[in-house]
Length: 119
Length: 331
Image (cartoon, rainbow over all chains, first blue to last red; front, top):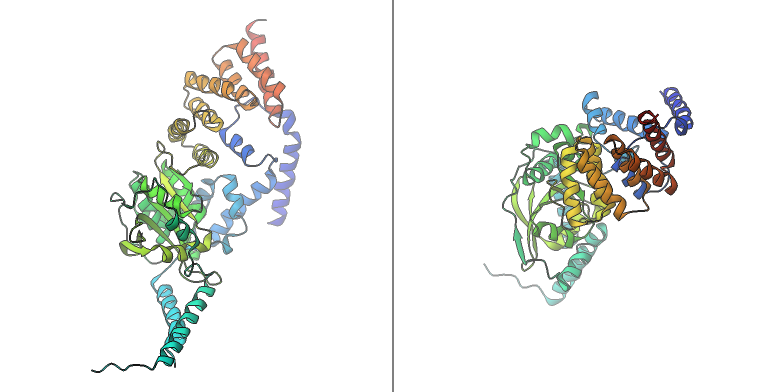
């Protein structure tokens, strides 16, 4: 898989080198304007491409079907993909169930009992 | 039964112990419970424009299934914004089975797929209250345990009462549950006071900034919902009439909707309000050329090239193409 990414990266680098000579006259997209307001730096397109594939794969590993994972990642902007790529395991996910709540209450209760009431 | 009266020393000892225990609990949790910083400020200087009491009645309540506070919260906010969805439908769009939860990013992405604008609020309690007062429920991310062993939970703030010092929340299986402000701040602080709103495209959140709202709408446009993005850019220009992103977005969405006269008007306004922006001249040139106004198109494209910047290759290509077209027109 690493080799595959390297190949893709190389292809992208080559196409990027050629880009200035083949660019089409085109409208400048609103997303480009917003992106240049966010950071004036030229974004690393190779890294961005890899991030998107990476998040799709992580989503699949977390129990989504391949098509759902792709659909959900495609709905994200590049900036959003970059914010979560490689970090999904450490990010908060709103997730609570009855047992977790009961455990939390019991633990707090034990602390309170230990400190307040135990003689 | 006769109540036993404890000797004074024992009472004093008990009180010292309870204070110590409270401090220990506070220390475990970053002390927000003992001294909620934002609520203390709010209490001292209450913003004049905030009504004392607000409760939104138009926010439907969905009791959540285990783990699925994300789908329930986003469905409540989206229904309030006018899109009828159920939590079950939203499971497919925001829930990660193995994590048994929902990512904040996906909570922001999902409403866009239904033509709504999702906006992340500044981490300020006053901003949450201002949104609620303006009629928009707010999704917040809370932590019910400790930073080092978290238990995350999404809830929907649907009201507050500054007199009694409470927020009103739709949460878990409890409809319009009240919670004292200090307790709310204590559970809300851990993820940096994270909060978001979902609004229909014709309404800009009251606390929105031009830059961040522009990003949110550009994301909607990029996702392919050109019609709703167009409506949102119009709303944006009502709030910030000279907004560069607003004018460019209005032109680009009009162009994508094949409404060339409107696109031309928007880009003309953009070059007038922002005469140093090559992107505006480039896009104006493009639309003018499509409309057959070649002379004006050439001068707009030349201006874009002269202004230079990172978009120079695009501007040069636009100019070249227009010149080619003029060439075929008058050989």
